Length: 391
Image (cartoon, rainbow, N blue to C red; front, side):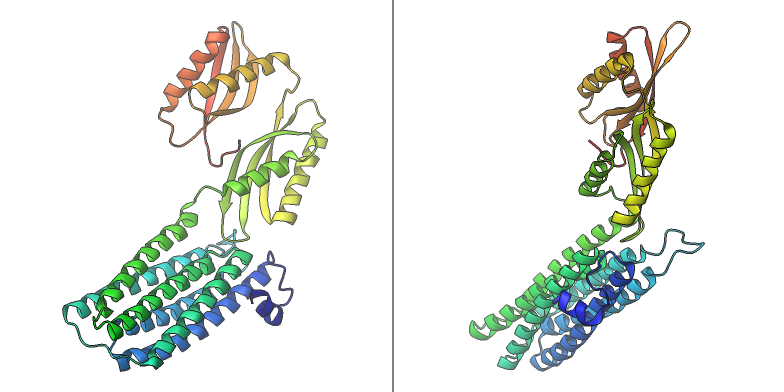
């Protein structure tokens, strides 16, 4: 259905990485959602009023809030597609994350209102009317929301949209909510126990939990979450596939919205190679990432002595034995600088954020480890934080 609608309304509809196509899909999904939710709201508010059902009325208000969320999503896709300017050199892509956060907050507000209405119905119960027409409307609503859940989910994955993925989860919540309302109505009719308020209470708790989860999920990219391990591995493998590249480290990824990823990385190459040729390889890496992956990557050149036996011996010793301090420790940029009476071993040590040691204690432990094998060496260690784990 996503491709069918895309083919009908979007030019070059399969080019999901295109910002223009991506924006068009976002707008299309938002418009479809607005239309469906307004129609469902009108149907349910009529049924809720006629049946005196607090749960159906609350479900109708929930659909009205969903249409509001659709309007927010529509505006966000339009604003996020704006090109970079002097005040926002990285573009406006994070507006989508803010829109997703807004949708999550709206879900929380609706959850609170559902909770209040359900508690009121439990404390002061009133009879709920039953009709097959009411049942038909609820079943129709469930069917529509199931389709919308699938539509939003598939579209969100195709264009990598947190906003649409959040809206898909919201549609799933609506399916559960309306199903609970339907079960409550049937139980009230055929068993004689009015559970309308209790089912409304259960639905409200579920909606609140979902809203909280969505807030957490949409806040992470705004706060600067760690890059996806799959993306990190893909970047590493692609860089290592280039001729003359010996290793890579210090990868940092900044997410400024879908399709607006900026990164920097250090790439190790043999110091004996022609620096002009090495620089050309690094330039090609940057161009290829931008062309193929839409990642603006900056590559730092790290020359290393590949065939130096002394450097190789001490590097191997440190890499092997540093794991006894913490399995996650890694080193890079190792070089040996002779001094008047001793030699300095200079290198960086990549440290995970949750290591149970201070920087000074860690440096002392590594220095003592090195001196146990190479007593004439002094260690000069720079502590690096691990922004993205490259193993």
